[in-house]
Image (cartoon, each protein chain N blue to C red):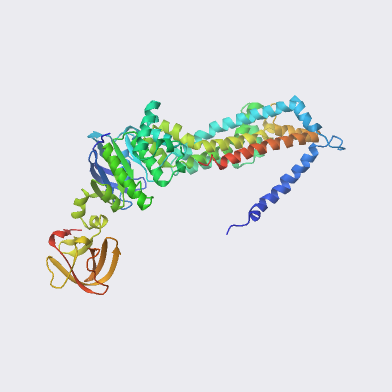
Length: 258
Length: 329
């Protein structure tokens, strides 16, 4: 017998309702308030769209997220290929453990540790230091879906390609990579969406250079006292990410699951 | 595409786990013929197929294609066709591109690719216009089977290797595909090595049968030869049905259809044994009578319509000398 849908969905729905959706409604209400809290206005939203400074931060966030995505992809793809398709039965799990262990440490602790490493190396906070921190944080999120996709490629598909005349290089380009595409798309989308709103790493390692939408919202609320504009920005960002998540989920449910 | 003659010489293969899959196999697969490797699972038949394809490297021994030693060649340079048990179609490519794969990696020009893919799809009975653009996971099992066959044939392989390709199909579809495989082999003149554990499949397709057991080829011959003169009791019971009775010098092998039920005073046999009917089983064209004789059971296959005894009847079974074969083991 199948359990009732409401029973299955309820635990998570209640949790999210209490800690995300209800606060989000408060936030949305906040975004429509005039500074004195005396009336309803769209002024906060208009500010976000009118002031080019906000748009610049969104663009720079996109750039940081895009670079993080490309960098993690470049590191994760060959590593996943090796562990999933080339390593021996004893070697694989060891490599996987060695690769993933550094990421079990909390991002805050890791960023502080990275800060002292960067100082030891003679570097200071700035764009480069922040990118090191970003890649460090998002590497496993890129790696795991790619690795999972590669593991699922049947050995016989590779053997079939070889017998049909494909060199190892042909096999990689014509069989392994196309069949890894779902993992690449999933990993890239996750890293892109998550890193756009990253706040900890830019704050600790970015110095004056690293500034994401996440950082901006933080400062609007806590330093700038501009709660209304901060709330409006947060609502807009959430809306954009929701659309992106929906598109991703729809793709993942259909085409991606070859 | 006339195929090559494939010879395996003293092939030994031990896997890294320590299991020995092949213990010195000699095999000759004649050009333009279907040779079947028949044996129970674990006998090494699939490993031998992979060694021929270059997917496994033998520890010892050689593989020759028309006398040329290909043992050191990687699979992509052997020009073989291989149909895998799980088919291994490429899920990211449509039917046309699956079949075209071997031509694409050979960098053939587009018009030639199109021409040959069309030829291969028509050869296996799939309409290129209707099926070419379909995704492979939208096809039925039998259709996927045809795509796998077309993909292997399109490169005009020196030898076509088939690893239990029809194992998962319904009986009727399997019978039809076996007939089509024979037709395709006749039309193309391909050398085929066909792996199966199913004696009926082996009987229907083979020009030549190699019966394998525990990493060795125990007997090679054409189907009639192997059926009529099995080398030992294993071959006798694995290829066709057999009564195997202890006798002088080893065992006596008698096929059920050679066993006669004798009426009183009836003669014309060299051996006769008295017994009691244990069971009578109707099997379409034949009726099997199980007769208990001195602690063993003798099976007689009678044509339908012949007088049949009932369970519990005392009967005499017999056979002539030329239908009985004595084997040492």
